Each structure stands twice: as C-alpha cells, then as structure tokens.
Amino acid sequence: MTIRRPEPTISAEEIRKHRESLPTINISNSYDVLVEYYEQVDPKLLDSGVAYLPAKSVEMGKVDQPMVSHIRNGVWAIIELNEALDKLNLYPLDKSVLKEAVALFVAHELHKLTKKDWKEQFDISQEEASEWAKKFGLFDFAPRLSAHDYQSVSVAQHRSIGFHSNLSARFMLLKPWTDIADTLASIEAPCATEFMQKQLDQITDGLDFYYHKFNESTGMLSNLVHTGISSWAREKGLIPLLIFERGIVYIGKEGTLCKLESAQDIENIYGHFKRKLNEAHTAISDPQELQRNKSVQGSKGLYKFDNVNFFYSGLRSVLSAFVASAVIEEDTKNRKVIIDVKNSTITIDINEPDMQYPPAKFVEIHSGAIKSIKADDKEIKVGDVVIRCSSAERKEGKYTLLPQEIEIDGVKVNYSKIEINGTGLMTSQLDTDTISMRTLALILAGAER
Image (cartoon, rainbow, N blue to C red; front, top):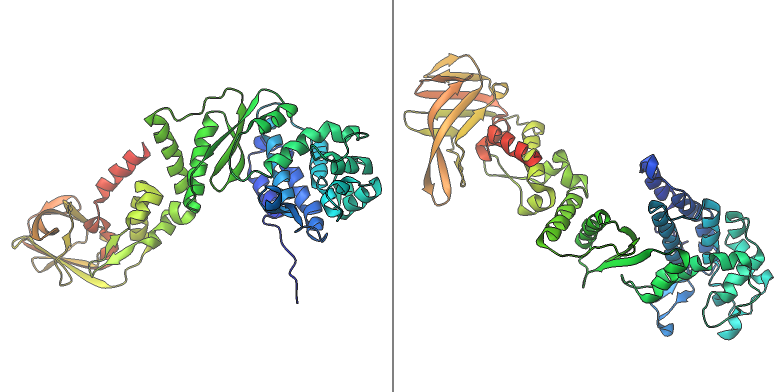
C-alpha cells in the first residue's frame, strides 16, 4: 500500500505572492512569519508522524480536529491578530517575538503525543519537549526559545490540569497569545464570547470582538456575500480576523457601532457585494471573456445574454460584452441587405428581421463592412448607412422593422430601393438586434456616472 504524503492546503509560495501583491505601505512582518512557518515548520510537522492525531475531538465536547489543522488554525489566528494590531497602531509583536508566539503554539499540544493517561500526559521533561521541538524545526524557526520554554507550554497550556509552577518567563510573557490562539482555533462558527474577550484583554485593552453569521451557507455565493459585508464592516472600522463557512469574526476598537439600522445600510452592503461579485473572475468582469457566454439566435444573428449574466456582471459589463462581440467576432459570409422604402421592407439575405420590444428606431451599418451599394439598381459610393425605422407588431411580441428614411454619410437620400453587399454585416450592425450605438454610448456614460 502506498501512503501519499499530505500537502498543505495553502503553500508558502501562494502566501508570498499575495504578500508581494499588497501595496508596500500595507506590508508588515506578520505575513513574512506566516511564509516562514509554511516553509520551515509545516512540512516537518506533516512528516513527523503525528500530524493527523486528534488535537480536539467530539469525545471531549469539541469539534474533531487533527493536530495539523488545529495548529494551522491557531497560527493563522496569531498572524491575523498581530496584523490587526499593526493596522490599529496598538503595538503588535515584532517579527522575532511573533515567531516565538507561533513556535510555542505549535508545541502547546505535546502532552497529547506522550501516549500516557490523561493527568500523566503533562509529566513532560525538558528533554522530551526538546526532541519534539527539534522534530518540528522549532529551534531553527525561533532560535531564542529554549527547551524550558517548550516544556512550559506543553505542561501549563491547559487551564485546570498540568503543572503551573516553575514555568519559563518567556512562556508566561507570551501565554496570552497561545491562549487566544487555542480558543480561536477551536471555535466552530463565528461568535464573540466573554471568555474570548477576557483573553483579548490580556493582550491589549480597548478592543472588542465582533462577528456576523448566516443561518446557513450556500457555497461560493455565500463567500462573496461575506466579502461584501466585510467591506462594509471595514468602513465602520472593523478588521476581519477569521473567516468561517457561515460568517466572519472581526476585531475593532471598543464601542465601534456596526449595526444594520436602516435600509441604506442594506443598500451599502448590497453595493459592496455587487462590486465583489463583478470582480470575482475575469469571466464575469472582462467583456472579452464575458462575450463568450452569449448565445446567437436564429439566422439573423441575434445576440442574447441570460439573466444570470446581468446579475453577476452588471449592465455596464454586459453592454461592453455586446460591443466586444461585434468587434472580436469575424463574420466571413457574404450578405445582402435590401432596404425597400417604397414597400416598407428590410430584408437580410432573404429574411425580414423582427425584434422583441422595444424595437430599434434606427439601424447603422458601418462602411467598413460594406463592399458595394446599389441605389435603384445603380452602384453608388460606399459610405456609412443609417436606416431610420418604424415598426409593426406582425406576430405577437415580434416587431418587424419598417424603413422610413435612409442616410449615407449623414446625408438623407431619396432612393426607393437600396441594396447593400458586404461581409461582417451582422456584427457591424450590432444595434439592429440589441440597441443603437448612440443609445449604448449614453447608457454607458450613465453607468459610469
């Protein structure tokens, strides 16, 4: 039987890329420490043989967590809390001390590795603690810590059991950090308890926990809603700390007001959600990618986007995708458009185009798509053509375009019949099937405002 080595859910390289993508002014040492943890400690933890032993279990009234998951969760909690303190100008740990807090937390469950009975688990010597610290790479990661420091955290982390005397001064100084990391790594859903608050008060005063929570989760859409709410909460002064399936725990200054008190608050959250939704993927936000989602209906080449595209991408992006479709797609077919003003008909090849309500008021055909124009059977100079139309509902919900006037290069002409030949006519007259380019420009300008 082949046992596959487990891989981290997130790599040091991914964290480093994210860190480097941040504006320089926003970069602190906290994420440097996280990168180094994933480079130096996490791989050794995975290879130690104890990564998937239980750290928390349902038998003890906790959610099941293997050692590696519990440690990773706590490390992230330490890093994010220190990052929040930095953003709030509340004396975060410097890099070397932050690494020590992380290293101590990695070793805080050593008593569960001794294979002894419950109370005897905490009878751990400095030599035993040192062996595990070496195996996890902790002496290289945080070289100022000693075997006494690792022994102290392994025997005294538990509140009611263990040994709570003759502990190292370094551990006692950083114990509030290992305490709060242990708590935050163990909660199953967003909350802000009195116990959590007391632990936070041991680190700094003047801060509170806050949270939002959904009753249920619907996957990716819930995640996007969470990011929309967190953007709104940031404006109120809160900093996202931990993200859960059904919500987010925040940290902020004591007394920060962050409540849904009006319809305007809901509108603001929805606005943040829409922006996050539109930015979620290039397939949603990039018109060139979005235009791939259109369908082409019938021989007239009508472009259609489903309602879901309007929801995810917004009106502006969908309209831009219509334009992108007209520009990007190449129609190599030779086509013929006949405008019979006398008999009030327009035919494209052999079909009369019809439209759903509201029908177009005019059709523009750019000269670049025209090979030749015949007016009353005589060939004339090629130019930009504008056909001003009325319409008639000849089928229920279908409006046939009826030509009223024709302009060529901005000049009204009085021919009874005009025949236009060219390639790419369908994409060039995008507005025939959707909306005129002038109207489109006005809508885009309004969307921009």
